Image (cartoon, rainbow, N blue to C red; front, side, top):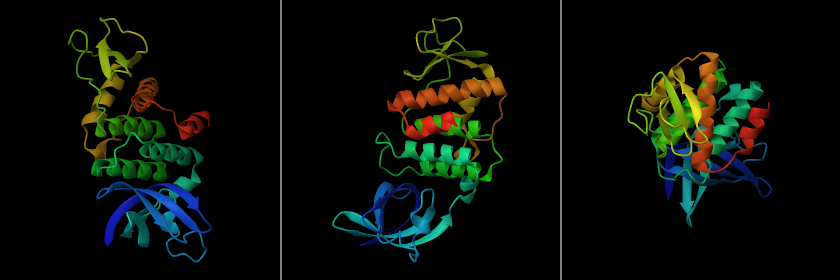
Length: 244
């Protein structure tokens, strides 16, 4: 049985002499595993489509419960990532997050749209990487069922502007008048407004905001800590990116 999908390669592992095992994120099938036979040979027509970050139209053959790549046509390779070590490192972190077991295999088109938009922005090189990283982390967590509550203080129900204290472990915010508790992170008014925008904006516009340096630093730390708290694990690629 054959099926045609559009998919982004979020993991590629060499297998045997010339094969590669791909983890592919697609709107039709969610996260799937595909065996690409012979793609490591120099004359393989499918070699470009088997690379990390390749977004392609794929024809897959299903047999004995396994998917094999039969045909592939490249849509986008995000070649700009290869010219910027910072962008490549951040892109590697984003797709490692997508590959975590905490992310459901069920189709979720907005997850793919968010990722493609992030890779496009990183490949282009004209957008602040801190904006891309923070927006991806927060919106991705909301898309997979971990939307934080940033609308009002969790203790008194009052307004949290011009800022408050975010608790990553609980996904809630407290106003300045209430006890902030342990592990709370400050969010000033601009950072809080940006976080609310990230959660509510169309996926196509989620990176379209600007912040001053200090507010962006608060937002960046908050979004990263929230993702790590929800997924309850670290990421090797994140450690590498942060140490660049």
